[in-house]
Image (cartoon, rainbow, N blue to C red; front, side, top):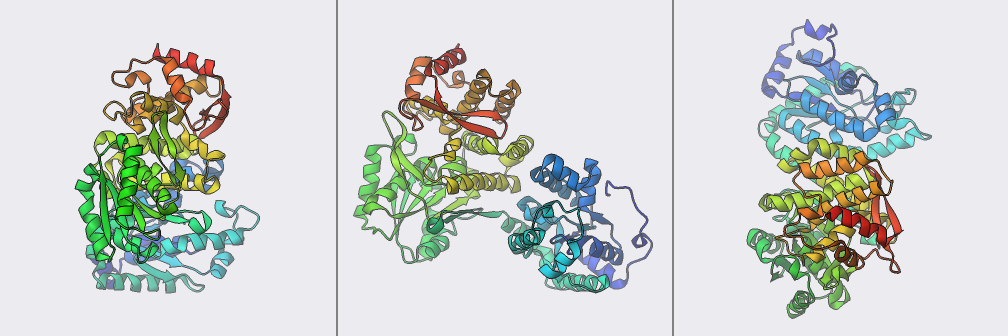
Amino acid sequence: MSGIPEVEDAARHVAPDARARAIVAALGGRSIVLVGLMGSGKTAIGRRLAHRLGLEFVDSDAEIEWAAGMTIPEIFARYGEPYFRDGERRVMARLLVDGARVIATGGGAFMTAETRVRIAESAVSIWLKGDLEVLWRRVRKRTHRPLLQNSNPEATLRKLMDERYPTYAKADVTVISREGPHEAVVEEALAGLERHIASGAHKHAGAAKAQAELFEKVRVDLGTRSYDICIGDGLVAQAGSYIAAVAPGASAAIVSDANVAGLHLERLHRSLAAAGIRYADIVVAPGEGSKSFAVFETVCKAILDGKFERGDIVIALGGGVIGDLAGYAAASVRRGMRFVQIPTSLLAQVDSSVGGKTGINAPQGKNLIGAFHQPSLVLADMGCLATLPPREFRAGYAEIVKYGLIRDADFFEWLDANWREVFAGGAARIRAIAKSCEAKADVVAGDEFEAGDRALLNFGHTFGHALERLVSYDGRRLVHGEGVAIGMACAARFSVRRGLCAPDVASRVEAHLRAVGLPVHIRDIDGWNLDAAAILDAMYQDKKVVRGALTFILIKAIGHCFIAKNVDAGEVRAFLEDELG
């Protein structure tokens, strides 16, 4: 039942007719969820539809207000839209497991992939579709719409239509919301439900539709070099069609490592063959050691020996090592070939595959030789994560939480509350991956070549890269994400030491990383026996060093990091000595 006190309603006292009983019976306990923009009539139509069917009616916005003890405009004003959306997601999850009912949703509820999955699994969705003239006439004199509180609300409404209508179109039934008697729209809704039932879709489409909803697309906006990041399940098996669309007629040189090749290469072969794409494999040893001059030379020679032309593509099938290596080869061979990233690790899916950084390591440090070279496409197949060892998944998660720490406090709070669901998989995982890719895409679009704010993405990396170098990139002792986790915790503690943030900020960072199983101290590295001077020396090979001065990404608050230049080396050394003491 709803958390809102019951209001006497005629629907409680009027028995549904035979037509209504037949619809409810055929739905087999599934709810009916109304979606659409503000002004489309979801509440008014929902009440009348529930009345006709003899079902309970619930307004999700009213439920949110009841639970919060404040109005939606007050929630927006006090906590912001991300906070409201997270509460909306949780309320919808609860409403969809409490039995058959008619649910009117807020305009943004259906835009959340997790909510669409839940609706597909346990309800039938009806989109009340209105045109701009009708919707604007209904909402223009109302002052309680938070998203319309600006200087040009009509333009905002038009923009919301452009953004949301493609997603609303995924609903099971579409009904036109037009001017006129509400009962006419209710009749169209009943007829739409009957057609949906007659098609049999309600009996078998739930799981398939839910699976289809586990897909997101993020656009990296770089003008003529823009590209899509596709996130979903089964994308390796569909790679051929995606690649044929972005590179018609091209052949493909596939770069992978021996571990990943054994797990995923055959599926990629089948997909490319089905799309008529010629391909050849270049398989290297797994691990950071393959980001070397020698292996880079081997890959470049193999591409040339395979007679791949500048118009062909290089496919990076693997984790961050393969993406960096293959991308740098693509940037170099024939002075630049196109390439496609198919990242198979969480770290690569949320970080290294996006943004065009490619390269190899040098004895002097990590990623010191390379080029900026954007991919033409990124295919992040969530199914590949099922084969990832738990340690590697945790390491990749460090890059996810980084995005919350540097510029999105609401995302960090969501992760703090939902990290277990992210680790479990499903809608929460795809939300975390998509949100991370959106964050990086936004930064890259504004600073492709790391001349400014893109350096924020290196939060934790000045410490982490130095530690990786000092263990000689030995993944048995330390993998990249673990180095980043230790680095973020160190950066937070260093920020406290410099008086930049409150101690509880560092405590929260450390507590969250520990909770998910990540290391937070240098002494957590197996067999560590080096001193502060060695770490400081390694830091001077960091790419952010400018004219011999150290640069760090430090933190003022959760969601607020900044670039600190010309940091005194003596101060860093003293901090490191205390960390190691």
